[in-house]
Each structure stands twice: as C-alpha cells, then as structure tokens.
Length: 541
Ligand code: F6P
Image (cartoon, rainbow, N blue to C red; front, side):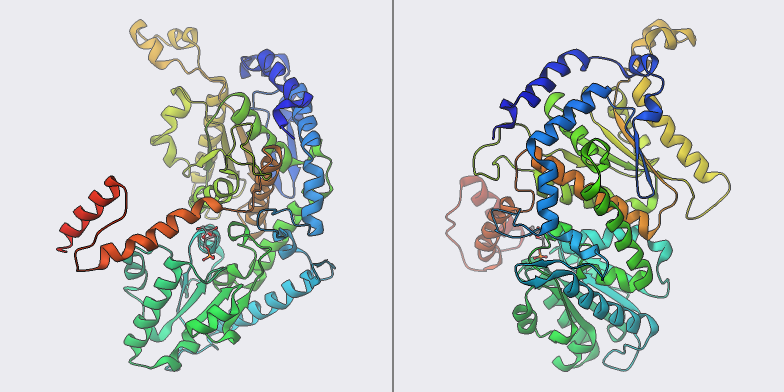
C-alpha cells in the first residue's frame, strides 16, 4: 500500500493546510482545557502532548492513519510471535523478555517465556555470586571490576541503563564499557584495573563483530599477561552473552559461562535480554527485575489500549506529523537528569537503525520521508549550548523533555531549579515572545528583532515520579513502541539493518592496505586511495 495515496493521508495533508500555521498561543487561548485533555498516563509516566501543533481533529486524523496502516494488527502480530521482521524472516519478541514467568508463549516450537526465565535464573545466580564475592578469579581473589565488551545494541543499552541507575549500583564494584575498536577505549577502561580482580563480559549477539572480538582478544592477552597465567585462567575471568554458542566456545569461553538469547531479539532491542548481564551485576537482580516489570507495564499498555489512548502510538504519530507534514528532520531528546546523559545515544541506535530506511518492507522505494534524526543532551547543559537554535533557528525541532518529581540526590533547591528550567524551556518554545512584548520591556528598537522569540516550537513533556529501575524500563519500552508505530506508518521493516553491512565489508577489505609494510596496489576510488596513502605515510609505511 502507498500510504500517501490513502484517504487518511490526504485528509492530513488538507488538515495541515488549515492548522499547520496556527500558533500554539492561539491554540491554548482558544482551548484552555487542552493542557488537561492532551495528556496520558502509561505506567508511572505522565505524558503531556498539549504543546504540540495539533488539535483534537489532528489527533483523530492521525489515529485514523494508524488504523489504516494497520498499527494495531502489527502490534498484535509482534506479540503473537509472527515473523514481522520480514527481510530476516524472524519473530520480534523483545516484549517476551519482560513477560512474567507464568505466561505461556510458544513461537516456532520454542517455549519462549520459559526459556527467558531459565536464562534470567542463571543470570541472577551469576550476578549474586559476583556481587557477594563468592565468584573468585584465577588467583582466588574476588571480582572488583566488570568490563562489558560489546558494541551497538550490545553496549548502548547496558551502558545507558548503568549510567542512569548508578544511584542503585553497588559502589564497591566498578563497571566499565569497552566498545570502540579504537585502542584507547580498552586502554583507558582497564588502565587502573587489576587483572586478578577483573571479569570481562563479552556481549555480542552474533559473536562475529570485528570490534568486539578484537577487544575480547586484547582483553584475554591483557588478562593472561597480567596474571602470568595460561588459558585455564579464562574460565574465571570471562563470561559471554550471545546467540552463537559455537563461536563462544571457539573463542575459548566456557559455554557454562555463556548466557543465551535468541535471534528474535534485535540488537538494539536487547537491553532486557542477557545483554543486560553486566547491568544486573551492577544494580542487583531485584532492581533488574523492577526494570523488566517497568518495560512490561508499557508493553501491556501498547498491546491492550485503543489507539486513541495508546500513549506510545500517539507519540509515534506526532513524530510522523512533524517528519512528513512539517518536513522536520530531527527530534531532540532532552532529559533533565544527568543520569540520563546516555539516553540520546541509546535512542539514536534504537530509532535510526530501525527506521533510517528508504526502501519499504516490500522492497520498493518509500513514498514518504522516514526516520527522524534523534539527538540530545541533558538539560540544563543543552540550554547553554544548542537551545539558541531550538528557540530562534530556522529548523523546526520537536523536543521531548523528560523530568522527574523526586531527585535522586536532594541537595538544597537544586532539583526544583532544574525542573523550573525544564518547564520554562517548554513554555518559551511554545509561546515565544512577540515584538510588542519585547519592546514593552524597554528594549531599544534595533535589538527588538533579535530578541523576538517566534515560539510555536512543539514539545512533549514526560514526567515520572523518580528515576528508578522501573521508570527507566518504562521509558525504554515507550520509545521502542514509538519506533514500531512509525515503522508501520512508513511501511518499513524496523527490525533489520542492512545499511550497516557495506561499511563492515569495506573496512575488512581495506585493513590489509593499512597494516602491511609492503607497497600495496589499491583497487579503490581515488579519494580512498589518497587517504590510505597519506595514512601509510604517517605510519612510515
Ligand atoms: O553494526 C550494527 C549491529 O549489527 C547492531 O545492530 C548491533 O547491535 C551491533 O552491530 C552489534 O552486533 P553484535 O551484538 O552481533 O556484536
């Protein structure tokens, strides 16, 4: 189906002509109740979309579009375990990772929930052993540092969640993340660690990823060199998280220390699979369970709530509204929480690897713009950096503000000031400041245009009582389902990522030209050949 040829899409095009230029000031003046009405609750999250350039009619038309595109059917199909990842012919079941143990789900002959809980049980046992000091390294000393080696979805989720939940973590244990094949990443992460007290968790769905296997090999050398031990030390200092048992064994990690997940968990959807192992070690199994329960709350909401009240669906549709009808290119996520500093990076993979596509699931070129460019930084830091463009720039950037009622650290009035800033930013973006208002302050005429704030810049405000494992899980699931909704509207397979493959292949092909001391004839384009030649000169080759 060409979604842009449907009556529902055409109705939105027409509607945009009417409301697209309405100012949020007018919308609030003409409809003071919208602040109360255009809000929803999912779990503990209070979500306010009243500062969007929409009316009730807009929301009705967007929901009609979702119905036409088949959002509800796709959500149901995903939960049933149908192969909604069509290009890889796989089920998409990250939601099963958070289902309570009593639930029954059999997909392709696998007892999915039973298997999930079997692995969760093993993860719990392992995490408790490490946390209690019962797990001993090769020399008999307890583990003091855990280093997760992984990249993309095998890094960003646990790294983001660990940063977010540091306040819940065991401060006697150090947790580090190594992802980049840049050797500085490994060197900096391990420079002050004692090999006798260090445990590596090698996290890779495929266990073929160049960066991860290279870092894991370097880690093994660092460990054995540091301990002056042979390969027998590996068993006490390495665990693996993967779908690929053979490759784990081949690397030399005891499959007993391997925690499994399955091909129906996409890398960027894998935080709540065994990929969360290092996080579980840091925050403990109980807090980890709370995170899973938080996700599950939102999963149930997306599955059971009619589209017109389905919060992730509505947020996804608002993204479509700006991307396709206002030509907004980007979407800012501004958490007013330093603990959520890695959330934008995490969401970049989740959203952009999922929906950054120009070919639909049917293999045909898409009919619409897709994939918002996600970016952001925690407030208030961003206010002193890029908010100028948000307020007065020529680009329309829809914003998600995320804040919390209770601070994790209550120091004087700091949290109230933080939140005052968040509310002020949302209000300033929406209302702006007219030339008359600026002039009324006594601003000299020549400065008035510079101080005018156009306003009419949309934002969502998400408020949660506090940053806890549960509310973090709720936020993660909220965005996962936003991505799903948008992928259905744009008719994409949101669960494949073919676009990352070519670069991997080309890097493998180029590597010998960079490492060899011999002169090399390169069969590459002129620019690549010149760059490689310059690099070789710098390396004295
Ligand atoms: O390169 C992209 C990607 O395949 C991501 O989708 C994935 O999260 C990441 O690489 C890491 O893959 P793996 O977990 O198999 O090492």
